[in-house]
Image 1 (tube, rainbow, N blue to C red):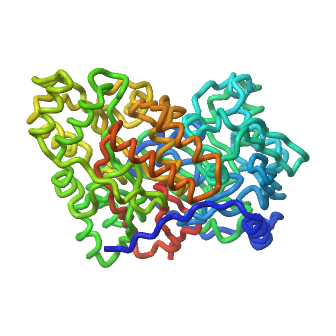
Image 2 (spheres, rainbow, N blue to C red):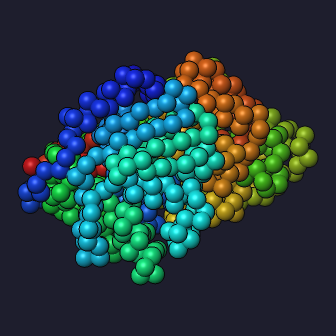
Image 3 (tube, rainbow, N blue to C red):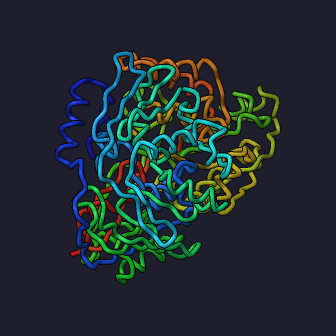
Length: 546
């Protein structure tokens, strides 16, 4: 078995700030002449169609792969293939002693994309940063009024409540002020929702009465320029010859060939019709690995597949009912049949590689008789009926949601619970789940920033009940611990608070953790520079073809 190494806690120190400044020198603060890109086209067989290209309003890796990590940049970035925060559009920053004020010094000479639908007249500056965050923060922002959408991650992370103001100090300096210190804040700014949009482009769209085009025709500063999208078929990008960071763009063309069926993706990869694919069927990994024309990098996934109980629906508001449903699920059998050796049983609401994971916690035993007794105690001796939602697509944390749902359905039937399996197209599935239409649903999560708050706050916090908290569970004793943990940089104290929170989770069972999967990413042998992103999206920074 691979050795698990915990993701490091982010510590805000003067060393980090100095390191950021040194890194900015290495990366360059100015802009060089346009690069001549290799005449290479890479085809990526992706699994699903994006709901749009505006990263601020989405929460899944489908949109992040198709927009956030192709078209856009953020003030700070995660190192390619890693979890360390490094300079992005901000070349350096300072943090006040009380941890509430962040001052970002922006990179000069960064160009927004030029396309048939937008030709910028200026380079990136502080106005773009202010517009990006004011849109999410201020309900009266002009762009938000012209194009009213929700910002689930911004809300789920508590930033809608905690970010007090965003100020332009000069054209290349921005100050962000928090109401209270937040240990994960810098890592959160590296997440896709914080992708920087063009204020000039937003202004053009509003004047034309086309503000919604922000989600259809994206403009960013990233390594690839959006060219076209044929719904449910193909997304085309051009390499950005003006990209501010050298060595990142090694392709002239990037094509997403949307291919929901994993068998078809595998056939196309073997035939050379695509160069990269995601989410192979576990049963086919051995065959792919033995193909002399392919490489199959893999790593332990920083993910969790789980079954969420909508705690606003009766009888799922009853903790004994949730405990009974949890106890009736044979997770070992599911991991064996669904993951086929490429997963392990999950116990906690975060993976074992996450720092502050409580290894002392154990699952309740799989016991149908005891589960039935618990249902009787809760007032349901003859069981009840509910809907069980199964995802229509393969995800890194769940290779076969339909099979998993059928196994859970059979387990619950033994205790008198009749589950009707339901599904929708992926975008509709997520939209309806946010609205709380489900009873129980299969879903999952891949960590976004390496901080425990990204699991406990985003999946279970009160601020996230209309976002990624699909259990709609708001439990004050739990939430108080999460909020308190955000307000200190003391890793020991944060760990103690998160340990208590995990204990409450196991007592209250707002969802049943099912499994953590191994992530495989098959490629053609001629693909170079590819790294598996620990946070789930498929990125093409530094990727080329021999």
